[in-house]
Image (cartoon, rainbow, N blue to C red; front, side, top):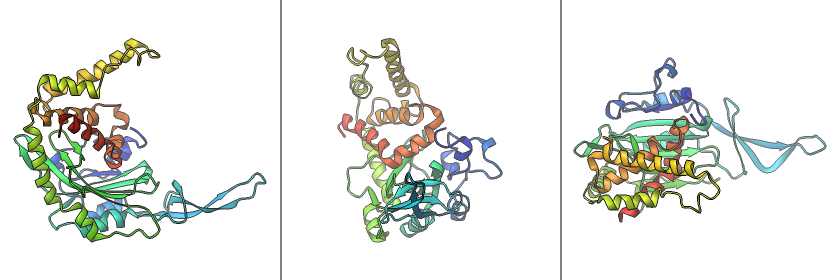
Length: 336
């Protein structure tokens, strides 16, 4: 299952609000140990500190061994490691500033939120090198009949230099447990802070950039309603499918076993067709812009690639913006 095992996903990924959203697809009771990682309501902050963020990332001097065999300290180079397991995360310069998870993902979120918001998930990936926490409303919001959403604020950072500390607006589509992070064509959908020596959390700047989760509900409700009102003919859907998943051309098949390439492409297209026409997570909105977005978003998050690394791939896709680019491409093709 990617870098992490099933045991990791079922102990180091805490999932809250399961009374509202159901269990995560990677749930395995036998891998939970003595304490389940699913919470019927919001996740207690104390549990996140105790189970996930009880350690710190520290900078230590980096040394190298020249040919004569004596260790020397590398100038302007440090190693970032876990202070409990000694896991090596990255080599960084003297100016790199670690952003501890407990402070930057929990304490700072508490300064941004209203009292009636809860923590819906807290996740560690890559042996602790990446972490994220989501802040959301206790109740799902039904936008259309049978279609509910959970807008939330996602906070993430890393100790391996892969992700700046970032606070961004995302939404979960409850019907399919898909995460939707596409920008709503407004400024301020994301607020990032680099790991620099003088980095600091400018709370008012973050508030101005992100707004409040309650405002997101109105934004997403309007966005989803607009998508549902876009009429998409069968011919238009086929054009979008051909753009996103074209069949290989003769040139593309020149150095590839033709039958295998065609079969793979055809299988993907057939699956998209089946989702669009028959899957209960998608089909109720067939022939609308929402149905098209749902078809491709559901395929990418639940069917693309292999299951063994799906959880990490989906989460990282949200954190690094890959999922947003994919969703945005569909919206562009729809003319939104």
